[in-house]
Structure formats: structure tokens, C-alpha cells
Image 1 (cartoon, rainbow, N blue to C red):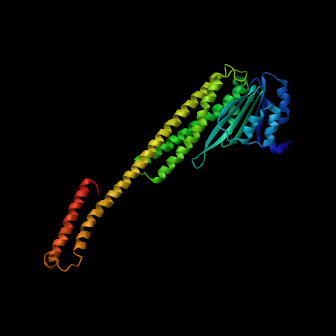
Image 2: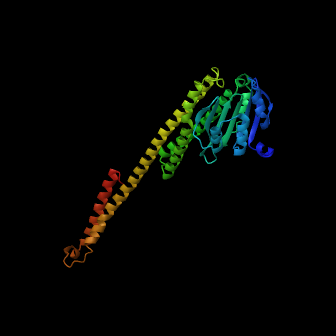
Image 3: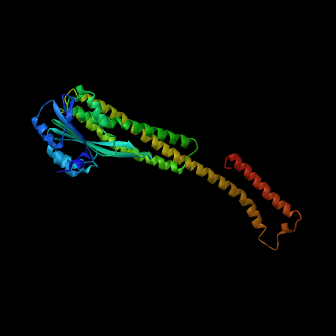
Length: 333
């Protein structure tokens, strides 16, 4: 058995509901007795945060959870999915939260839904589900639909928390575009673009599987999710579609920003190369003339002329001036 203090550190809350109304907190060892009573209007909703394997095994015993689902909930690192185990449903969701360094941290939420119970297990980064429970308890006419509505409420909360993250990513992209097309294109900008692409890829992996999950839930035919509850999952599906499209659009815009940044960096480097080449050509003229007259041959008539030196200097100056004018006119300098 788990020590009570250790258990409470991982059990966020365990509450019994009847006809959509909160009855009261329930001790974990008493859950099986409530479920065995099989009262149609009652169910138990327990929330766990990063539970130990021992606690999960105790929860499994009390709620009658499937071994494979419990193993997934303990190991975590699962892709979003929906699995059926007899008359129970097991759903894996990927949660997302923007950290202080602007990087997206991903976590997981595993939801078990069965006759008379709902179990939510959180791992890693996520917003606490206190708000979800409060929203459900403030709408008893909906909560009385049972554990199926709990599943909807959690999915809706997870998906809605994607929207502010997408908005933040859009703002980051707008700032990057202003930097790039404002002439402040740098290699560091390329690194930031790749960071955003990595965040978007993680968000895409979290969102894309939800479309199939929501589709299945809207067609689900069981007592857990009745015909009246299916429209709520269609609403979640609509939100998932919007987020998925926004992520795809952002990825395309990021690809364009990356190409533009690399192109502008290349153009800037070419401009520098052109200037260096232009000055190198100009400096090559006096170097060549000085080199010719510095060869120290015995028979070089120009060396004996009184006008030889002025002519050499004039030649160098005039050719350099002509080259400078031509390069300036062509935009090389």
C-alpha cells in the first residue's frame, strides 16, 4: 500500500458526482465500492499528476483499467491516440505550454473513460485542470451526461490551449519578417527560424492525430458518448482543423522567410564580393605599372625620359579613375 502522504502528492483530486452535482471527495480505496453499486447517475472522476507505478496499479485495481492502457499511462511518451478496451475508452493527448525561453514544452494527458468513472493522468508540461473541473461543475446539466462529457471537457481544454501558442508563434514570425525585410538579416535569424520550425513540428505532431480521434468520437455508439454528446466532439474537431490549418500556414510562411533570409544574406555577400573585386581591379593597375618599371632591365627608354615619371603616375591615376567611374556606374562600388 502507498503511504497516504505520498499518494496525496500524486492524486490531485478524486470526486464523486451524482446527476451532475458534486457529492464529495472520495478516498481511493472506496472507489471500487462506488463502482460496484452501478448507479446510473453517479460516477467518480479522479485526477493524477505524474503518478508512480505503484499508485497506477492501485488505481487500476479500483477502476478495473486494462493492463496495456495502464502501462502506456505510466511510461508516457505516447503519440495521441484513441483505443477501446471493452466498454472503456483510453485517449492520449499531447499538451503544450510556452516556457520562459519562448520554446514550447510538450507534455501528455491520458484519459480513461468507462462506466461510472473518468481518470485523467498528466505528465510533463501542461496547464492544471482545476479550471476544467470548475467549468464542468458549473454546468451540472452537462456534467450529468457522465464520464463522456469529462472526456470532452479535457479535450476541449487541451485544444483551446493551443490557440494562444499559435498566436505567439504568429507574432514571432511577424517580428522575424520585419527584421528580414527591414535589412536586419543575419545568420542568427536563420537559427531562430529553425527553432520555430521545430516548435511547429512538435505542435503538428500533437494536433494532427486529434482529427482522427475526434472523427471516431463523433461516430462513437456507446453509453459513454450518447447522441447528445457527439456535437460537442464535433466542436473540438472544428477547433483542431483551425489549429492544423494555422500550423500548416505558419510552416509555409517560415519556409518562405527562411528562403528569403538566406537569399538576402547571399545577395549581401555578393555585394561585398563585388566591391572587393572592384577595388582589387583598381589597385591592380598601379601594381602592374609599378611592377613593370620595377623590373630593373638595363634597356628601358622610359626610365631616361624626363617626363617618364609624370607619365607613369598620370597613366595610373587616369586608368584608376576610369575604372572607378565604370564600377561606380555599374553599382559595383
